[in-house]
Figure 1 (tube, rainbow, N blue to C red):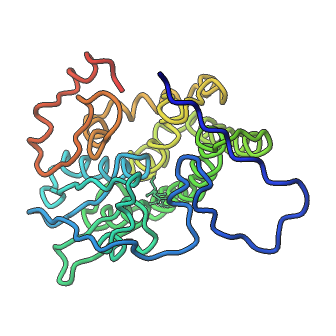
Figure 2 (cartoon, protein in one colour):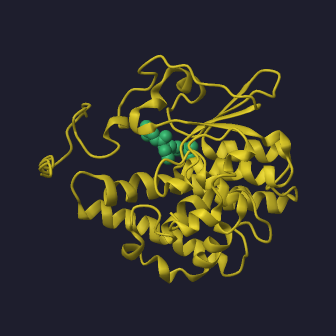
Figure 3 (tube, rainbow, N blue to C red):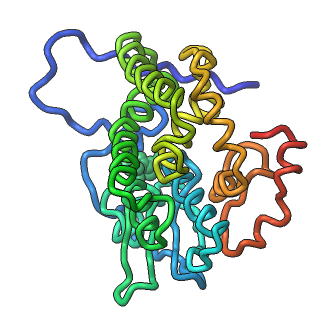
Length: 301
Ligand SMILES: N[C@@H](CCC(=O)N[C@@H](CS)C(=O)NCC(=O)O)C(=O)O
């Protein structure tokens, strides 16, 4: 017999907000356990370290995928210094609050990266900062021409600013909140549709986000807005009418077809077709048993 569905928590009373907010630890809803008012570790936990200078601690969410795509793209260019170990951080089980993880990212969010090739190990958090660091370290996917570099960074920072509206706003209220509220869903749906239109208009005249070159701006934007177009997050494609964004659809397909993007999406993935999941990655040969042909034969995502 199926377990009965728990009753949704009651809606807060109408009227002016209270003067302060207390932490309702049992509020319910997906993500509730990480929605807390205090920072810092909740438990002591050492992180593993593999053989490569770059150690990634992450999960294949859109923010995580940005970094694994970048690393796979660098390797595809022949940058052997970009070899990396990717360790899984299970955010559903609170592993982002372990002591060693918090020492890398005091904000307890994936992705987090350590570069052990520097005289003193360099810690990196925030996906945009990681993309920029790797682009500068390897001199790739960030144009050197000042105007093109500025355009790339415009879009990189645009994405970093808009992601909380997409994920924390629209995704949260549309897909995860324990009860549905029309006002925030409508508000954040507009905050997602406008950026989709921004991108669609821009891509009518540009092959890639920053113009003629594939850059870290594409790598930042594709895992979020491309996922909406592919209906790979929140099952909101119909609601947002993503099929109407024709130039976005063209770009999404083009980026998704890149072999490095296909590999990057698989790393630290714990959902979907098991053939598409490479929970940890320590060597390029780890992909050998999971060819894209097999994934596509098994039904894509
Ligand atoms: N601005 C950050 C956002 C990172 C972020 O929100 N990560 C989520 C997964 S996509 C996370 O770790 N959530 C765990 C939590 O909220 O406790 C970035 O781009 O790196």
